[in-house]
Image (cartoon, rainbow, N blue to C red):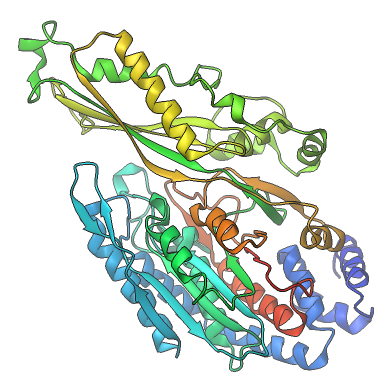
Length: 528
């Protein structure tokens, strides 16, 4: 027996998309344990199985995925083993190797693959290093078929065992069905799920292109220019762009309609020509660390209010309609607190909490370079310290304006200290926020067909806004990662179930696009 709510949901789903109701369709879905899958997969599969030939092909492809899941996990293990940390220039060779591995994988599948040179990265000290090349690939060029382009990234955030990981972050470890490793969920497994999807097909229902980069975690350096350059060539015949690079808010599947941007700053304070003994020189010099802590303390109040003039004033006001949308979202505050291990949050009600997580800016201080942080003691006055902090920005904020506001403000605060030390403020990332229209027919169809949450994402996908601006197309996001995957944190993981069933989701989605497109509207960008 299956739960009555599953029966009702399936009946409603089939009716919503005009699939003739029949007991054998329900039986097929229930035998597949379909109620465990994301709601969007219910929609896609049900559309596919309204055609007997496609039903047979989906079954065949699903079985293919199941029979290859150990191979898929091993490939993910091989990819996770590459320490492709784009923030560490010393690991740049690993980033280059990761791009080569990605290109090799796609080339072995028969794709037309290129490694596109996007230039060099200028470091704060004036030196330059090569940026990882961007992988582009193409499978099929049938003009009678729709063309989709999958975007993803294979660089990762920093990770060390001593940071609090229970396992080696670069050795994929399977514990109770969860695959732990840096980059497992963000974004190597989702990228591989799309690759496995293409690999599973004997005859793709659509033409598929890939754009895979290796600098997303540091702002997608060089990618904006490449997208502009490729607009009238590689991207000219693309109908849809697909991205899987975010997560659910709860156990309920979600459509994501917005992301925050990210302005990342270095604030460097330099004093004496070298580090000094704190006993010998302490009390006689004005210490750079004291200056730095002093100006950082002026960025944000204890209650979370940003103190930089002009920042809060630029934020779009919260509408009544948006407030109502937040009110209806499934989100449990106590569960959220338990998950992250805190006893108190900035806000005590759901709407305020979600609003400040998604649609209001925030300041976060990430660390201080040059400060002593190793175990033990060291009685030193650092000669130069560099604070690293970011402002997650939202509509209607602009990175160029934020850069000037922050730089002017910190210089003003520093001047009041009358310190002989030198301050240098640099913005190293300036990624724009992105927001879609939830009244777009794609969203309306999704809301009518299946019960799901419409959410925004507090993190940043730098290239999303660029795709929208350059192509003039709309974006919709739907993740396959779990709400508890721990992106950017210790013990990041991807559920084996989500990895494998996510691949089937993408298979079903390509069927849908191949059969009739999405909304029968060309020139539309879809982000999943």
